[in-house]
Length: 246
Length: 224
Image 1 (cartoon, helix red, strand yellow):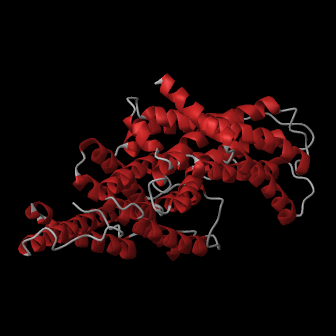
Image 2: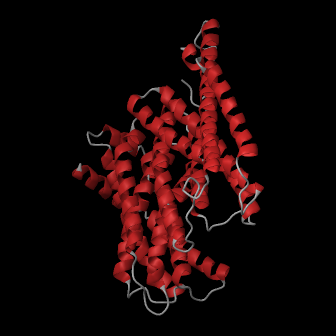
Image 3: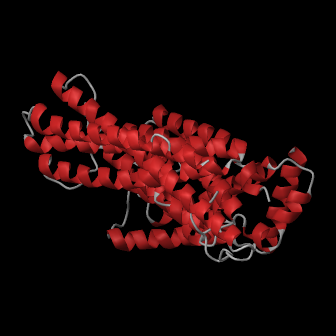
């Protein structure tokens, strides 16, 4: 079982590092400076992939939530948990880099005029409740079930929210966001795609590492329990709710 | 399933009649909020976007009070055990509680709208009342579904009073956007404007998506 988690991690890590180095090298040396915004525009190659990968991670958490509810396999719950947990970290990164970019190019740290910003903040606020919800349920089985239900509701909420917020703002401030659209020249788009792939690879690598690490911890705990030959050697504290276990 | 839903609703209405808790609290809270808004904004009268925003934020916060109380009797008096022992479909609990929350919100809105018109609102809301009722009904359906889901999620946790607003407020952002924007032209000074169909479409889509979703996953929130 351990081999399943560890397998291919080294290769994957090397590929990720190569992709990231390549992406940053392209950002630094290959992509042209933006005509209007100058150097600050290059944060775009970090910011937009962070946000996109975070949103996909949230939706992936919902998909694993569905799979957990259908199969009852604790591994799916763990996958969902780790995906949402990592996405939250990326989302913080996206919000911070977005603020820096906004300050650099629009002169403000935050603006309500941009629907993408606002809807991203709402999604972030919603998912920020995931861990408080999880950790305030003691029974591990129920915790997994409730967390899966939350992941599904929130996963469905992500696209609907984007639609509603975009409709609310777009009439007042007509603005066509051209992140992947036609207005980008070819070398910019290529750099952006490489950055996006690198960020996705980073996400998957970190996700697999955390799964492997958590799995190793559980196995270690189980082995310790068996070594101490008695079921009562390690008793979980019933008042303390922990991260998902297998 | 219909009889189970009916029985559950009757049970909760009886509880409300004997010890009215949720609805009076929601109405009083709303009126108190209007008073606060009057002083905070230093306005004698509000209209248009401002009026619509105040109305919807107040209604949503009042709804959170009701959502918090929704499953309390089930949790504290063992209603869940009784329900789970009964040979009925578990989704009937969702349907019953959502209808109940819808009814609560509708009753609250009758009083709140009257109080709003008397205390704070500049233009009369009675002219565009049919349009307002449509928006209110669609938004209530969404709040009822989301509220029931959130209440059922939070009731089993230790931090449920904290979790209900934390979960319900971000989830209802699309509802508030659509409802407030739809109401804004109805509450403008000097004659109500037209109701925009696209906000109704957003509300309807929201109700549909979360209604189906809630129907599909509610079972998992009740299993013991």
